[in-house]
Amino acid sequence: MAQVTRSRSSSDPNRSKMTGSELLLESLRRQGSDRIFGIVGREGSSIRFNEIEGMRFFLTRHEVTAGIAAEVCARSTGMPQVCFSTLGPGATNLATALSSACLDRSPLIAISAQVESFDLYYNHTQQCVDQRRIMEPMCKYTAEPTKAEEIPRIVQEAYHAAQSEIPGPSFLSIPINLFRQEMAYQRAMELLDEFGKAKREPLPEVGTNLVKAAYGLLKSAKRPIAILGNYIIRANAVQNLMAFLERFDIPAVNTYTAKGALPFSHPNNVGTVSCYLDGLLSYDCLGSIFDQTDLVLLLGYDYAEDIRPEMWTGGREKRVLRLSSFPNPIAGFHTDLDIIGDPRHFFDDLNICQPPSYDSFSTEDFKQRKQDFLSRASDQKGRLLPQQVINILNKFLDNDSVLISDVGLHRVYTTLFGNVSGYNSFFASCGCATFGFALPASIGAQIINPDKKVFAVVGDGGFHSGSQDLETLSRFGLPVVIILMKDDNMGLIRIYENMNAGEANSDTVSFGSVDFVKLAEANNCVGVHVSEAGQLEEQIRKALASKRPTVIEIPVVYDYEFRGEHHKKSLGDFIDSK
Image 1: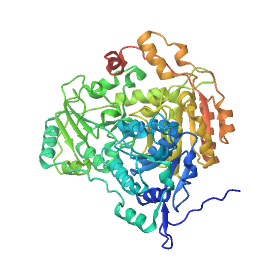
Image 2 (image 1 turned 45 degrees about the vertical axis):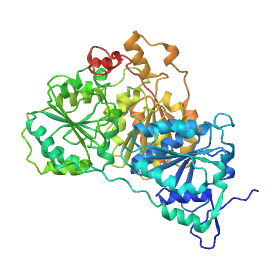
Image 3 (image 1 turned 180 degrees about the vertical axis):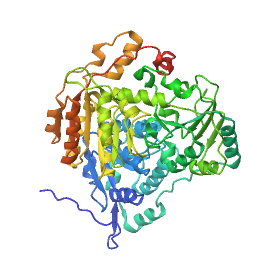
Image 4 (image 1 turned 180 degrees about the horizontal axis):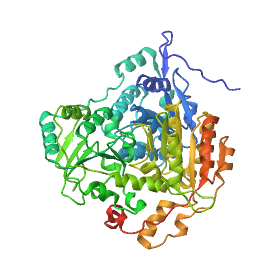
């Protein structure tokens, strides 16, 4: 039997040498990382990931899974997390996770092996592509060292870049022979001490003049409304925000990635909005919310979060205040006041001011229509409506739960109608809309929150694009409950095709049926099929009690048509304008 290298302390004073692999892992550990998600290739002869104490490797079945799991860990904690891939196709597979981290603003540290430095001829050596250049447009920092001594420096720089606003991925491409290089132990320790833990750049304070200007807009308004973005969460400004909204009595809606910034039951919380809302409810929801407002407060707003100006610009003439961590980058998107800085101090400074008196502003009709929509039941035997599924799931969502949505038509229902009680309790791929996001995201979320209930709502399309990592759930004993809405279609694409062409093309949207119960069982998970509302509630309870990863397959019936003119408020007009 081959002998396995055991972990050893990198601070052992009796050692004379340190390898590049030890230097890398110790550099990561000193930055605060203790886990790596990934897949190892032939560099396994040079790095084993057990060279030092205090580091755990989570082997996944696909590089996208490794990257998304790490990305969600990063979003959950606000701290950089690490994923690893082998060279060539391993690195190019990892690119999807990097694009997701880029557009969802997550501090991800991605590392790929590269061919040996003496054989580094891009596009000529086997498996050798210019990984650094491929990743560069999506990353805040990239590096490909030429010697092991550079590793502590580039790791520190990667962490610094990833966690500074705007957060995003850093990428390191490391030639395999550097993992095997040895250097004097004393020199290695000097490098580790020299390039210590990266410091996050502090958020700038909002100047007094800008606070006064913001208060001036608030005083002159009659009906303000706030749109909340994820920057509020990652800046740890949730409590400051809540105090401001309560003191000024301003209603708020949120993007997908800001879901939970206000608890769903908070009196100022109107709910999540999206470009699909009007078409889904066959009602001018966006008009009922925005048309009578005269001041839009974009608090932590990020254009990538996909609430677009055309959703709020109708009706009354409006002024727009934008609070973010970076200047407005979108040409043609007008703001009356653009504020860059720490939202905590901004809200605290405003809360010293006397709140103006605003006109009454009720969204009760909108909320009632949402509740009526949730209360509908299917008249097709053996199939539930997607909103029925979410309505039942809401009974289990509390302060000790995390809700994750994949990408697809089911995401519209989950994000708009799922009730979450706090921030960092909901995760979706919004900026990149990464197909197959939920299963790998649930791996990361359950590892970070071992004592919480983690629910992943998926469609059969996105789920089966990466379902091999059900085995990863089982292997690590992660009791995620997967709510699988099955319709054997690319449901959201059917809606798009129906809107523009009158009917969908089955060649582009329809799948063959898969037995997901058997698939779950084949991967050592629990699999159950339910077709009635009562069964679903019962099976969720059983899944939670079992403490095992469970796939609950639910045939659903979607309405693939956005009828009437209501969807034109945002979705239709946006598509037609392109």
